[in-house]
Image 1 (cartoon, rainbow, N blue to C red):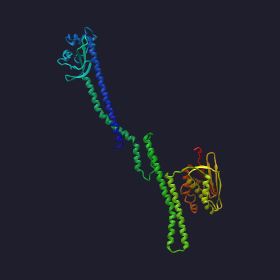
Image 2 (cartoon, helix red, strand yellow; image 1 turned 45 degrees about the horizontal axis):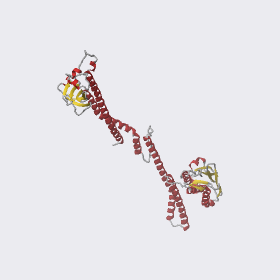
Image 3 (cartoon, one colour; image 1 turned 180 degrees about the vertical axis):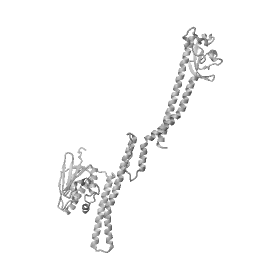
Image 4 (tube, rainbow, N blue to C red; image 1 turned 60 degrees about the vertical axis):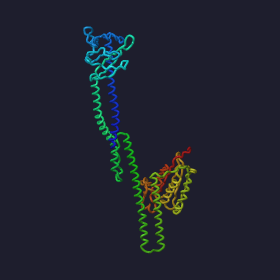
Length: 475
């Protein structure tokens, strides 16, 4: 059963039960009102009979001497014209007088040879339905007392219920035949409304069925009303955004890795093929093998850096932020890159604030500093200077690392943190750069909420700034 059918079925079932309760309640309420009206009418008739007969309910002997109750209740226009309005139709009302044992003492002419039902077990005034000649009547049985207060008979008055029963029967048929029609109509309407309401879900299904790796940019149209279906569609679109982003990262990672590894593999293959063509001198073998090892080491570093970026982008890297002394990590990073700087006769100067405390992950911070310093050494000419300055501002500590290298054109500064980006391919290949160092710096800095920025002028050098978040000393 489809969702729209289930919604229609459940809603219709619940409504059918509620309607059945309501219809039943209405029917019994109408029935009670009808019986009450008849009871009030009978009560009025009893009062009129007792008043017209000049007999008290405590004087049963007077009733026994009356020739016919009809004489006390027929038309009497010449005596009192107003009484005609009170006179009850003799052909529709039945009056009967019985003694305490149920023997009929007198009755109205409308009863003819028939008698009304008598219930000897009732001592007080009672109202009940009874069958009379195949017709249902509403009866009232009133006890009559003598002067000593002893019941000596009963006055029984009955009113036919034929018209009322016709009305109740018609009402029952209306309820009975209209019930299935209403339920069927309600099911159709509910199913139609449910189908319209879940149309966004169908769009979700249709979009998901059409989606593949070639069209991950498709999105579900958002409904007009900001309801639960709107939230569902928006959530699905957000999920598709994340899936598209993850797929593109995976695709870019594969493309970048294959592109960057293709060249060193081709170089290694060509070198080894040349070596096996004919015997060569020992020095030549050693030179070529050393070249191959260098390329393999370069490939290893590239793979390590790619894996580091992949871990960051999959949100599997969680920094362990500590309060550390920035100057100690700067000195440590300088010691690690000093051999490379000495080979190019590059001097590194430090002008820093003593005991500058910053919140950072020690391992990640070391990797950031080492990458920036290594990058500065690669692109600085021999005999140049790299200056490191740390200063405290009102809200943060800023560390600037400046070199006197070849610089970066202004129009290319925005892309320096993209992976595998190289300002000049030929120039970068000569330095052995992979185009991943600054990308790693940016990712690791973002993880620690360290703001990293770059300023550069072509042929005048480049300056990287690390702005550390404010340290909460009250924690």
